[in-house]
Every structure is written in C-alpha cells, then in structure tokens.
Length: 343
Image 1: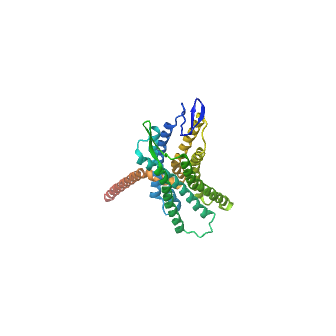
Image 2 (image 1 turned 60 degrees about the vertical axis):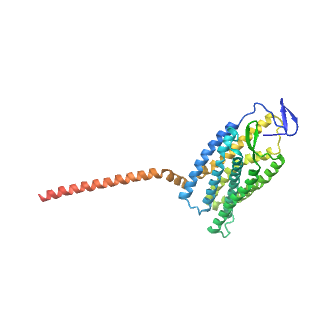
C-alpha cells in the first residue's frame, strides 16, 4: 500500500510521492492465497450442486428460484477470479495485461450483480408482503424478475468497464503487479461514486424494505406465513455481513493516512481479514439454502440417484427371484398332490 510519507527509524518525514519503508511487517500474502484457493474450491462445489438441483428439480418459473439461479451464477463468476488473485499474492502477476483487465472486470461484475439481484429479491418480497393489496399476478412478477436479472448483469458489466480499462500491469524490480496507476484523487472520486450507487444505496433500500416486511410478518396473524421472507433475509444479511466491513474499510482507507509503520501494519491486517471475509461470501448461499428441507431432499436424490437406482434394481431382482421360487415350490407341491390322488 502506497502512501505520501516515509518512515525512518520510527519517525515520519512528510514528503510527496514517497513510499513507506517498513521492516518486519506482518506478511498476509501467503494466508490470502491459501484462503482464496479454499474459497474457490468450496464455492465452485457448492454453487454447481445448487445449480444442478435448481435445474433438475425446481421450477425456474418461480421468481425466487430464478433469482437464486442468477445469484449462483454470479458467485461462480466471482469465484473464477480467485485462483488468479491467489497466484498474485503467493507470487506476483504472471498472467499478462489482458488477464489483468479481464479478471478485474469479472470480479466487479460478480460483486455488483449480486448486490442488484439481492436488492431486487428484497423489493419483490416487499411488494408481496407489505403491498399485498396490489394486483400482482405471476406473469408480472416473472417479468419483473427477468428484467431485474438482465439489469443486474448489464449494470455490473457497465460498472466493470471503467476499472478494466484503467488497470495495468506494472513492473517493479522484476515483480509484476495488476493495479490502477491513476492519481489517488481520481481513484477515490470514482470509488465514492461507484460504491455509493452500487453498495450503500442498495443497502439503504434493503434496510427500508425489510423494516416494513418484518413489521408486517411479526403481526400475530402473519407469523406462520411468508417463510420465504426468512430465507431471503438470511441471504441478504449474509451478503452485507461479509461485504460490509470490507467496503467500509476501503471507504475509511481512502482518506486515512497511517502515521507510522505500526498503524500501517494494523491497516494491512484489517484489510486482509475483511477481504477474506468478503470473498468467502460466494460460499454462503449454498450453505444457507441447504437449510431448506426441499432442497436438501433434492440434493440427496441427485447425489444418491445412481446408488438408489442400483439398490432398487437389486430389490426388484430379489423379489422376482423370490416369486419364481414360490411359484416353483407351489408347482412341485401341486404335482405331488396330484400324483397321490391319482394313486
């Protein structure tokens, strides 16, 4: 992390365009790389199983299932970038400038498409639960969900273009890095605008909607209704619990300057921990959704289908053999009885 101060012997000398020279700072790069690989493995496994369950056993005409399908795709797209960032932190950027731009774009598309999809899911629940007097039929809901899903991908892709064009591969002492070389003021201004519109504004909308939803659902006449509200609330809460600290820390770090090496080290550690928490979100949705008994049953059917079919086939073969033996035994007894009567 660059700064505008140089630290020498524990003292700070203010100057322009210089870098901290701190010794023995805690290196989180190996931990970051290891966690990114683990998150990638769990996310790909969980979200692929979730997609298979949705496609094989669930109706994609259902609005909630359509949103969950797109969320799983968004998490998978985000997860694809993690091995690249893992190699970056464990070694340095070895994939070239095109991959640098592409991975930055894919990262941002995965992040902001998830935010927009979760906001659309919340608004859908708000209309159904709080504004249930509105004449909304299934066709209108499906149309709204389809438009929201398409919009999430279009807006996420548009938001990624700025960063994708600006990032470059920089070389320092034989080490390559994938970063934005722009002036700090331009970076901060673009970040404020992007995060305000695509993170904090959706967060405000979601908080408003769920305040009204919970107020309605917690009424005595509604406590046993709207079970989907709880599922959507858990999914939304997991997203903002994971990504909230990271975005808040980035917002603070954009105008906060560490005064010494210790402050810089604490900021780096906090940044690394919050980033690992944020990236781990792509594993959360499959875990949360597997609390549904229906999805768990479908998953077990999917995983055990071959074993179950083989077992059923063996049972059928055993039953057929047993029936044949009984028939043969009865036939033998009948023949013996017939011979006795004949004598």
